[in-house]
Every structure is written in structure tokens, then in C-alpha cells.
Amino acid sequence: LGRVLKVVHDGVNRVPIERSLVVDPVLKHALRHLRFVKSRQPSDADSVEFADWREGIAEALDALAGVLVFKEDRVRARAEATAARKEAAEVRRRGEMGASER
Image (cartoon, rainbow, N blue to C red; front, side, top):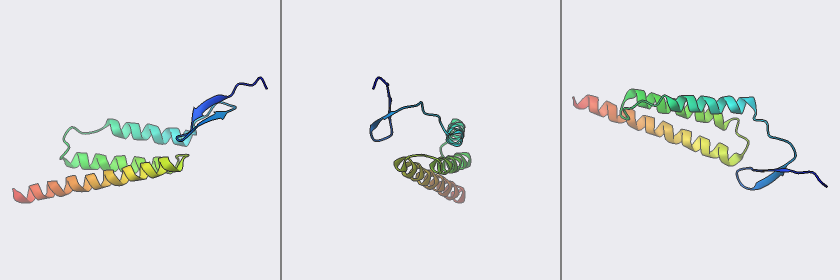
């Protein structure tokens, strides 16, 4: 009975575990890739490069959603990917409208 359990948060509750958590290498890679893509954000939010970057974010979020442990996290990552794609499409639409007005 003298054993000490580590307590971690599972996204919903605090739960005891008997051993340390080891991060799945695939999950670790997906998180690192998302951070890398995020770090390459262009400064002009109305550019084609920005739209391409948002598409890259969406792809990274989709890849992450495929390896996340908790359903709520997967749903959130997919929703964020959808929002990133919508933003990219809107930036492209504004760019096309601006080009046609010139």
C-alpha cells in the first residue's frame, strides 16, 4: 500500500498512473511538425503565401488529429483544420477580387 502514484490530467479529469508516460513517437513527430509549420508564418496576412501557410497548418492539424489519444482533442484539431482551410480560401478569394479590380 506504500506505493505512490503519479497523477496526470487526461484532458477531462486528473487520473493516477503507475508509470511515467512515454509520448508516442508518431504523436511527438506530428506535434513537432505542427510547431515547425506554425513557425513559418508569413507577415502578410493577405498574401498567397499566407493562404498556402494556412493550408499547411490544416494538413499538420489533420495529421495530428490522426494520432491524438483523446476524442475531444481529435475533434478540436479537425475543427481547427477546417477553419484554417476556410481562412485560406477567403484569403485567396480576396486576392482574386483585388487582382480583377486592378
